Image (cartoon, rainbow, N blue to C red; front, top):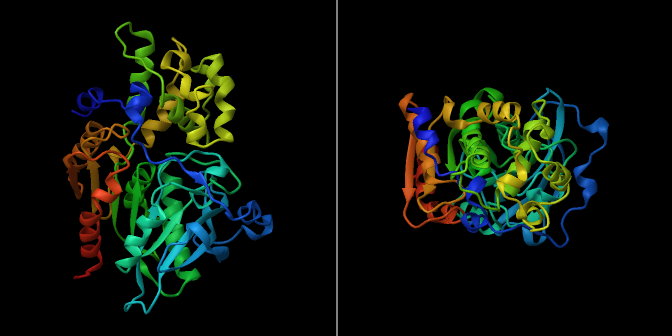
Length: 399
């Protein structure tokens, strides 16, 4: 059943092109007065220490500060895929006023895709989910919000784009660090994320309890989570060599180089084995520009799959990493809520349907809700009431 479902997926951005992806999250804009780069590169001797502990913080003001909250820019410790302690940046917003008994309930929120270059870190830009206004809605309901920048995004090292284990470590470790930063934050938390962040939240549901046992994970909310990426790449590659293959230009040019860079953090992936010379020559662009820049027609945005993939290229190393990081096969230690727009053409409905079907067939506790006429960027607002009710239940909150 798994193969049958996956092979009929609408493969979305990887094949259909820019027109199919126009609804993606708003492009991030660089923040005037954003924290200086020096904050993100701590002295080497300050990095060793237990994961989930704080390296340094500073007050966060200006356009990134969430109204009604005490805001901090955070640098904390996590552990990368090779067992090395690394510095990770993020933000923390804590409601003003007196916390409830046990401290403010915490949402550790993983953001959506903005790129793999350091300048694309959510704390350095505006436009990534959750926005300031989206965080403010949770603050107003009595939740603290910690938002990770992920490992290697802003800070030294490489960003493991859609590498589930390092994503969930970044989420769990900022949840632990939040209590050290502000004693009003409680030890119980929920993982939440959109798109790339939805992928991260699902991996947190499977592993964060064991990774950070001192922080009690109560559940995970995944909004339009990325899945079946290996299958999507296979379909895009198939279109190159099949005369009936449907080809276009667009976000194959944005997401594929990000997937390559992410896979290279955990595997020996040589892009020259499957990318054209033109695509290999453009690969370094991903190390300095965010998704808005990658969409430029003179860069990756002007390439079709035939411009990207060689006809007889060997994708096996890349596909192993993508398949290993597909959330469809996860086993969860905590309840999960998946929220998906039916009009989403970035993370297709069929992809999420297949993922949830695989999880539920194995008896996993997954609550799945779908929304008519809601696209990729719209799901965060459209599903807020349902997400709030579900999260309140996890914390035993009655309104």
